[in-house]
Image 1 (tube, rainbow, N blue to C red):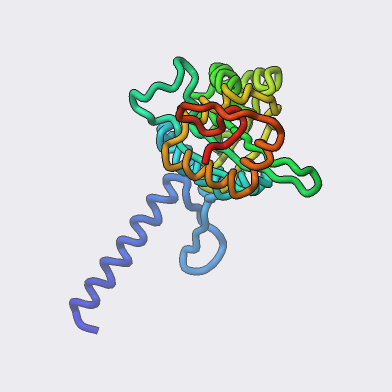
Image 2 (tube, rainbow, N blue to C red):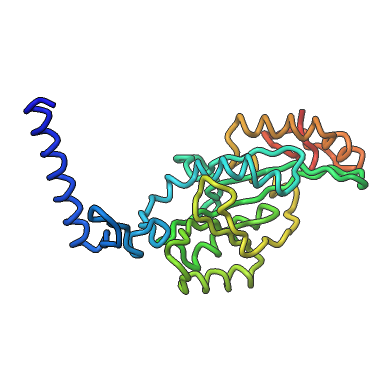
Length: 260
């Protein structure tokens, strides 16, 4: 070993002991039995003991949550096909006034094993950060449900925060109005999503639903929905049920009958 190598080695050793002793002073490490100055992590410093919660802006939650809803939640709901779109950012597009624009909209096509019918179901999601979650979110979701079948409040609530009493009024209000409540530790991982309350299903008027879907869905998703529903026989079955088409208008369902 050359003198240069020896000096470099001594420098590394000195640095190790300097860092080691500093971590002991900070209570991240503690001395333990053994040779050579053995140390170990203190209980407080173990990764499983504490995970720092870093707040995220609400807008950063939309895309990952929408992807999980599209890839996983729609499968759990047993939709034959579905579209999912972030509808919060539509600029100056007219969507019907205050509290009429959900953050995420999922529209699924549902078929049945025995029943001959095919249904289209619209489900809205009001996304909230932990800091931004309050009872108002329930009333926003309730406003969305006037034109959809089900509505949820979807809250990013890291488990590292432990039991949080501030969410109890939200759950109570949601239960009273039939609004669903989903809490998620990791917006990207469906395995970390917890459905605290299932949403109550209602039946909006077909014309109201039709207008809602046309106003909220981006053009590409609207076109995809029409193709999916027609592929699953929605058009033929609903037409056979006696619904009449409207002669004009840019609609998605047209009083329950999907346009071609």
